[in-house]
Image 1 (cartoon, rainbow, N blue to C red):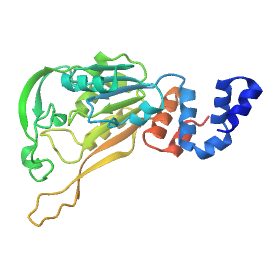
Image 2: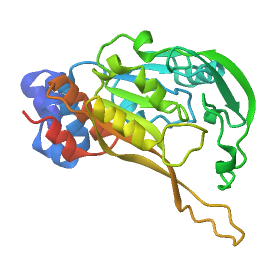
Image 3: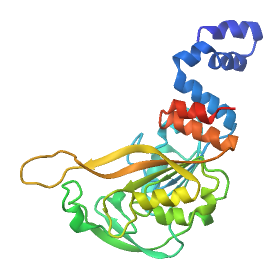
Image 4: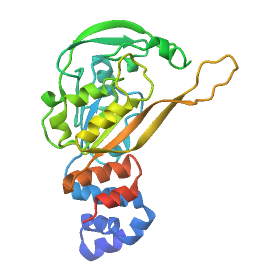
Length: 284
Protein backbone atom coordinates (compact mmCIF):
# COMPACT_ATOMS: atom_id res chain seq x y z
CA UNK A 1 0.00 0.00 0.00
CA UNK A 2 3.06 2.27 0.16
CA UNK A 3 2.56 3.05 -3.55
CA UNK A 4 -0.64 5.08 -3.00
CA UNK A 5 0.95 8.45 -2.01
CA UNK A 6 3.37 8.30 -4.95
CA UNK A 7 0.58 7.51 -7.42
CA UNK A 8 -1.60 10.27 -5.94
CA UNK A 9 1.18 12.80 -6.43
CA UNK A 10 1.80 11.65 -9.99
CA UNK A 11 -1.84 11.49 -11.07
CA UNK A 12 -3.73 13.59 -8.51
CA UNK A 13 -6.46 10.95 -8.46
CA UNK A 14 -7.26 8.88 -5.34
CA UNK A 15 -9.39 6.34 -7.23
CA UNK A 16 -6.62 5.83 -9.78
CA UNK A 17 -4.10 5.29 -6.97
CA UNK A 18 -6.22 2.65 -5.26
CA UNK A 19 -6.98 0.96 -8.58
CA UNK A 20 -3.25 0.91 -9.33
CA UNK A 21 -2.46 -0.80 -6.04
CA UNK A 22 -5.22 -3.37 -6.43
CA UNK A 23 -3.92 -4.25 -9.88
CA UNK A 24 -0.26 -4.34 -8.84
CA UNK A 25 1.66 -7.59 -8.83
CA UNK A 26 2.66 -6.99 -5.21
CA UNK A 27 -0.94 -6.67 -4.04
CA UNK A 28 -1.98 -9.78 -5.99
CA UNK A 29 0.89 -11.74 -4.48
CA UNK A 30 0.19 -10.67 -0.91
CA UNK A 31 -3.62 -10.67 -1.14
CA UNK A 32 -4.60 -13.29 -3.76
CA UNK A 33 -8.14 -13.79 -2.47
CA UNK A 34 -8.97 -10.07 -2.35
CA UNK A 35 -7.34 -9.48 -5.73
CA UNK A 36 -9.34 -12.28 -7.33
CA UNK A 37 -12.55 -11.01 -5.77
CA UNK A 38 -11.86 -7.48 -7.06
CA UNK A 39 -11.24 -8.87 -10.51
CA UNK A 40 -14.54 -10.77 -10.46
CA UNK A 41 -16.51 -7.81 -9.11
CA UNK A 42 -14.95 -5.52 -11.71
CA UNK A 43 -16.12 -7.89 -14.45
CA UNK A 44 -19.59 -8.19 -12.91
CA UNK A 45 -20.01 -4.39 -12.74
CA UNK A 46 -23.14 -4.46 -10.56
CA UNK A 47 -24.38 -5.35 -7.11
CA UNK A 48 -24.53 -9.13 -6.56
CA UNK A 49 -28.06 -10.49 -6.12
CA UNK A 50 -28.79 -13.14 -3.45
CA UNK A 51 -32.02 -15.09 -3.02
CA UNK A 52 -32.27 -16.71 0.41
CA UNK A 53 -34.95 -19.37 0.88
CA UNK A 54 -35.05 -20.02 4.61
CA UNK A 55 -33.78 -16.57 5.53
CA UNK A 56 -34.01 -16.43 9.30
CA UNK A 57 -30.76 -15.66 11.07
CA UNK A 58 -29.09 -18.16 13.38
CA UNK A 59 -26.77 -15.55 14.87
CA UNK A 60 -24.09 -13.10 13.81
CA UNK A 61 -22.09 -14.32 10.83
CA UNK A 62 -24.37 -17.32 10.23
CA UNK A 63 -25.42 -16.59 6.66
CA UNK A 64 -23.83 -18.78 4.00
CA UNK A 65 -23.01 -15.66 1.99
CA UNK A 66 -21.64 -13.60 4.89
CA UNK A 67 -18.20 -13.15 3.27
CA UNK A 68 -19.85 -11.71 0.17
CA UNK A 69 -21.92 -9.27 2.25
CA UNK A 70 -18.76 -8.10 4.04
CA UNK A 71 -16.85 -7.56 0.79
CA UNK A 72 -19.32 -5.42 -1.16
CA UNK A 73 -22.93 -4.19 -1.10
CA UNK A 74 -25.38 -6.93 -2.08
CA UNK A 75 -29.10 -7.18 -2.75
CA UNK A 76 -30.84 -9.84 -0.64
CA UNK A 77 -34.34 -11.18 -1.24
CA UNK A 78 -35.26 -13.58 1.56
CA UNK A 79 -38.17 -15.85 2.39
CA UNK A 80 -39.24 -17.57 5.61
CA UNK A 81 -42.76 -18.44 6.82
CA UNK A 82 -41.99 -17.36 10.41
CA UNK A 83 -42.58 -13.60 10.38
CA UNK A 84 -41.08 -13.04 13.83
CA UNK A 85 -37.74 -14.49 12.72
CA UNK A 86 -37.60 -12.14 9.76
CA UNK A 87 -38.28 -9.18 12.05
CA UNK A 88 -35.40 -10.29 14.27
CA UNK A 89 -33.09 -10.33 11.28
CA UNK A 90 -34.15 -6.87 10.10
CA UNK A 91 -33.63 -5.47 13.59
CA UNK A 92 -30.13 -6.92 13.84
CA UNK A 93 -28.93 -6.26 10.28
CA UNK A 94 -30.86 -3.22 9.10
CA UNK A 95 -32.96 -2.83 5.98
CA UNK A 96 -30.50 -1.58 3.35
CA UNK A 97 -30.90 -3.62 0.16
CA UNK A 98 -32.70 -6.40 2.08
CA UNK A 99 -36.25 -7.53 1.28
CA UNK A 100 -37.62 -10.26 3.57
CA UNK A 101 -41.00 -11.81 2.85
CA UNK A 102 -42.98 -14.14 5.18
CA UNK A 103 -43.75 -16.68 2.46
CA UNK A 104 -43.54 -20.45 2.57
CA UNK A 105 -42.15 -21.38 -0.84
CA UNK A 106 -43.20 -24.55 -2.61
CA UNK A 107 -45.61 -25.56 -5.37
CA UNK A 108 -48.23 -22.81 -4.91
CA UNK A 109 -50.65 -25.16 -3.11
CA UNK A 110 -51.86 -25.32 0.50
CA UNK A 111 -49.72 -27.37 2.88
CA UNK A 112 -49.29 -28.08 6.58
CA UNK A 113 -46.34 -26.38 8.25
CA UNK A 114 -44.96 -28.46 11.11
CA UNK A 115 -43.54 -26.01 13.67
CA UNK A 116 -41.01 -27.77 15.90
CA UNK A 117 -39.58 -27.04 19.35
CA UNK A 118 -36.42 -25.87 17.58
CA UNK A 119 -38.18 -23.62 15.11
CA UNK A 120 -35.26 -23.56 12.65
CA UNK A 121 -36.18 -27.23 12.00
CA UNK A 122 -39.80 -26.44 11.08
CA UNK A 123 -40.83 -27.98 7.78
CA UNK A 124 -43.58 -28.79 5.31
CA UNK A 125 -42.67 -32.41 6.06
CA UNK A 126 -43.39 -34.15 9.40
CA UNK A 127 -40.47 -35.32 11.51
CA UNK A 128 -39.33 -38.92 10.95
CA UNK A 129 -39.47 -39.60 14.66
CA UNK A 130 -38.57 -43.29 14.69
CA UNK A 131 -35.52 -42.62 12.52
CA UNK A 132 -34.41 -39.58 14.51
CA UNK A 133 -34.60 -41.47 17.80
CA UNK A 134 -31.41 -43.33 16.75
CA UNK A 135 -29.42 -40.10 17.11
CA UNK A 136 -29.17 -38.22 20.45
CA UNK A 137 -28.93 -34.81 18.72
CA UNK A 138 -32.16 -35.41 16.79
CA UNK A 139 -34.21 -37.40 19.31
CA UNK A 140 -35.39 -34.31 21.28
CA UNK A 141 -37.01 -32.76 18.19
CA UNK A 142 -40.79 -32.70 18.29
CA UNK A 143 -43.62 -30.82 16.64
CA UNK A 144 -45.31 -28.32 18.95
CA UNK A 145 -47.98 -27.07 16.59
CA UNK A 146 -49.10 -27.11 12.97
CA UNK A 147 -50.26 -24.31 10.71
CA UNK A 148 -51.99 -24.34 7.34
CA UNK A 149 -49.98 -22.28 4.88
CA UNK A 150 -50.49 -21.26 1.28
CA UNK A 151 -47.17 -21.80 -0.44
CA UNK A 152 -45.91 -19.66 -3.30
CA UNK A 153 -43.78 -20.60 -6.29
CA UNK A 154 -40.39 -18.90 -6.48
CA UNK A 155 -40.98 -18.35 -10.20
CA UNK A 156 -44.05 -16.26 -9.29
CA UNK A 157 -42.61 -14.05 -6.57
CA UNK A 158 -39.32 -12.71 -7.95
CA UNK A 159 -38.40 -11.10 -11.22
CA UNK A 160 -36.42 -13.27 -13.60
CA UNK A 161 -33.20 -11.29 -13.42
CA UNK A 162 -29.91 -13.04 -12.83
CA UNK A 163 -29.61 -14.61 -9.38
CA UNK A 164 -25.97 -14.77 -8.41
CA UNK A 165 -26.39 -16.93 -5.30
CA UNK A 166 -29.48 -19.00 -4.49
CA UNK A 167 -29.42 -20.50 -1.01
CA UNK A 168 -32.01 -23.06 0.10
CA UNK A 169 -32.41 -24.30 3.67
CA UNK A 170 -36.04 -25.34 4.15
CA UNK A 171 -35.70 -28.60 6.02
CA UNK A 172 -36.53 -31.20 3.42
CA UNK A 173 -38.56 -28.96 1.10
CA UNK A 174 -35.68 -27.89 -1.15
CA UNK A 175 -36.65 -30.03 -4.14
CA UNK A 176 -40.25 -28.80 -3.96
CA UNK A 177 -38.97 -25.22 -4.20
CA UNK A 178 -36.60 -26.02 -7.07
CA UNK A 179 -39.24 -27.84 -9.09
CA UNK A 180 -41.28 -24.63 -9.15
CA UNK A 181 -38.36 -22.30 -9.82
CA UNK A 182 -37.30 -23.52 -13.26
CA UNK A 183 -37.46 -20.03 -14.82
CA UNK A 184 -35.39 -18.57 -11.99
CA UNK A 185 -32.88 -21.41 -12.33
CA UNK A 186 -32.25 -20.50 -15.97
CA UNK A 187 -30.59 -17.28 -14.74
CA UNK A 188 -29.05 -18.61 -11.52
CA UNK A 189 -25.26 -18.81 -11.23
CA UNK A 190 -24.74 -20.71 -7.95
CA UNK A 191 -27.06 -22.86 -5.84
CA UNK A 192 -26.22 -23.81 -2.27
CA UNK A 193 -28.79 -26.30 -1.04
CA UNK A 194 -29.12 -28.18 2.23
CA UNK A 195 -29.44 -31.88 1.44
CA UNK A 196 -29.99 -34.99 3.54
CA UNK A 197 -28.56 -38.47 3.09
CA UNK A 198 -30.78 -40.08 5.72
CA UNK A 199 -34.38 -38.89 6.20
CA UNK A 200 -34.91 -36.47 9.06
CA UNK A 201 -38.41 -35.71 7.75
CA UNK A 202 -40.87 -38.32 6.60
CA UNK A 203 -41.09 -38.50 2.81
CA UNK A 204 -38.44 -35.89 2.11
CA UNK A 205 -36.31 -36.12 -1.09
CA UNK A 206 -32.65 -36.93 -0.47
CA UNK A 207 -29.40 -35.68 -2.04
CA UNK A 208 -29.51 -37.95 -5.08
CA UNK A 209 -32.90 -36.65 -6.21
CA UNK A 210 -31.86 -33.02 -5.81
CA UNK A 211 -28.54 -33.52 -7.63
CA UNK A 212 -30.32 -35.32 -10.48
CA UNK A 213 -32.91 -32.55 -10.82
CA UNK A 214 -30.29 -29.80 -10.92
CA UNK A 215 -28.18 -31.74 -13.43
CA UNK A 216 -31.24 -31.94 -15.68
CA UNK A 217 -31.48 -28.15 -15.48
CA UNK A 218 -27.89 -27.34 -16.40
CA UNK A 219 -26.02 -27.47 -13.09
CA UNK A 220 -23.04 -29.52 -12.03
CA UNK A 221 -22.20 -30.54 -8.47
CA UNK A 222 -19.12 -28.74 -7.18
CA UNK A 223 -18.59 -29.67 -3.55
CA UNK A 224 -20.04 -29.95 -0.08
CA UNK A 225 -19.55 -26.76 1.89
CA UNK A 226 -20.48 -28.28 5.25
CA UNK A 227 -20.93 -31.86 6.44
CA UNK A 228 -23.24 -32.71 9.34
CA UNK A 229 -22.18 -35.90 11.12
CA UNK A 230 -24.13 -37.30 14.08
CA UNK A 231 -23.43 -39.99 16.67
CA UNK A 232 -25.68 -43.06 17.01
CA UNK A 233 -27.46 -43.77 20.26
CA UNK A 234 -25.63 -46.57 22.09
CA UNK A 235 -25.12 -48.00 25.57
CA UNK A 236 -21.32 -47.99 25.47
CA UNK A 237 -20.67 -44.30 25.94
CA UNK A 238 -19.27 -43.69 22.46
CA UNK A 239 -20.08 -40.27 20.99
CA UNK A 240 -18.26 -40.44 17.67
CA UNK A 241 -20.04 -38.43 15.00
CA UNK A 242 -19.84 -41.29 12.52
CA UNK A 243 -23.04 -40.93 10.46
CA UNK A 244 -23.21 -38.37 7.65
CA UNK A 245 -26.77 -37.06 7.90
CA UNK A 246 -26.84 -33.83 5.92
CA UNK A 247 -24.69 -31.30 4.10
CA UNK A 248 -24.72 -28.00 2.26
CA UNK A 249 -24.24 -28.95 -1.40
CA UNK A 250 -22.95 -26.45 -3.96
CA UNK A 251 -23.93 -26.49 -7.65
CA UNK A 252 -22.83 -24.21 -10.50
CA UNK A 253 -24.60 -23.62 -13.80
CA UNK A 254 -22.66 -24.55 -16.91
CA UNK A 255 -22.44 -21.26 -18.81
CA UNK A 256 -20.35 -19.28 -21.28
CA UNK A 257 -22.03 -16.02 -20.22
CA UNK A 258 -19.34 -13.66 -18.88
CA UNK A 259 -21.68 -12.01 -16.37
CA UNK A 260 -22.73 -15.35 -14.89
CA UNK A 261 -19.16 -16.61 -14.77
CA UNK A 262 -18.06 -13.42 -12.99
CA UNK A 263 -20.75 -14.01 -10.36
CA UNK A 264 -19.62 -17.62 -9.98
CA UNK A 265 -16.00 -16.51 -9.62
CA UNK A 266 -16.96 -13.98 -6.95
CA UNK A 267 -18.80 -16.67 -4.95
CA UNK A 268 -16.05 -19.24 -5.54
CA UNK A 269 -13.47 -16.81 -4.16
CA UNK A 270 -15.25 -15.28 -1.18
CA UNK A 271 -17.66 -17.99 -0.02
CA UNK A 272 -15.74 -21.16 -0.90
CA UNK A 273 -12.08 -20.01 -1.19
CA UNK A 274 -11.69 -21.84 -4.52
CA UNK A 275 -9.22 -19.59 -6.31
CA UNK A 276 -8.26 -21.92 -9.17
CA UNK A 277 -11.95 -22.30 -10.03
CA UNK A 278 -12.38 -18.52 -9.95
CA UNK A 279 -9.38 -18.02 -12.24
CA UNK A 280 -10.75 -20.64 -14.63
CA UNK A 281 -14.16 -18.93 -14.70
CA UNK A 282 -12.62 -15.50 -15.41
CA UNK A 283 -10.45 -16.68 -18.26
CA UNK A 284 -10.87 -14.75 -21.49
